[in-house]
Image (tube, rainbow, N blue to C red):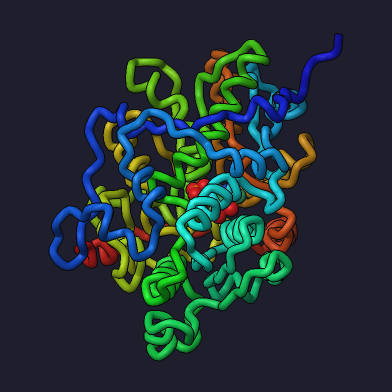
Length: 449
Ligand SMILES: Cc1ncc(COP(=O)(O)O)c(C=O)c1O
């Protein structure tokens, strides 16, 4: 019989619950703080912008949370996603390593982001909310929330980072097709946006600014809530469908990972593939869990573990996380979804406690790996996801050089069909490397509250 390339599950094998690792942590999460009083905030402080069901998930002590039937029905449009054995890549890399990838690019929006967008839209609809406001960097999250809002009959307003709004018209058109309204951020629709525009009329925008605008929009309209595509516990929770399916598929393949790899922006796809392995890792399993970030925005590898704001205008609670400082504006690398100054507090806690590892790469070696991957496996990866691929290449090389075979599992979080300008820049030799300079890190750290 020929060798299996794809491990496929059936509709009824979509996980029925999300896995919550909060009760397993060695050290409990530090609580979010009120930015004015610096005191821990309770659930009521988040109620103006989030529905209570999501706030409960944010702090839940339960090890698993059932997925509502209406959410599962929508998941069925693209889940379970396939797990591939990258046999052609293994051959091309001449490695004794076995490489598997979980492909989330088969969702309608082309990434893992709808896994939480659908859940968030569902709970907001249940709470009687009419409209969701959010930010988006490269447009992946905005398009996922536009899709999910449409599925539940909610309106959707997206503040899209100005430079992406101009450079990525196709993501914007996708959001319009699903019925969302999209403003370039900074915009004149909010006080926070208008303040930035007054000081910097040509501002290219940043995720920190766009978050301020979306939070302000939600906080000032009673029928509107805010929705975040990464960072928070409930977002990572929803993404655990990825890792749970992958575990079942690895069992089908008769294999188990030695290393699990995901790219890292705010932490949601990495959390999605890695968190289901965390309880056993805390109990002593040898599996390695590796988060990969850009050298241009190295919050995990060069940031401080400290309380910081999630946004530029300091509207969000203070979160304990690895951060480069809330007013840090990352260079315009092409992995737009990885340009965030902070990191998931949950992933930060795991890193601090040695449960996960982190690594950073510059964008040229990342694109080199992306192109090589596309040429053997066919799929053209999102530049964000290509960071994970770069790390896979290095693991595969280490397996060869050390003559130690290993099983590598990674999350291919999205396709790069709307990132072709980045590929063109790389292929024509115009793409540049950026490394975040140490002096700027030190300067941004001075703004930590
Ligand atoms: C395809 C893809 N992968 C990864 C990310 C990074 O986000 P996160 O760390 O939340 O998975 C993004 C963000 O937009 C993305 O679009």
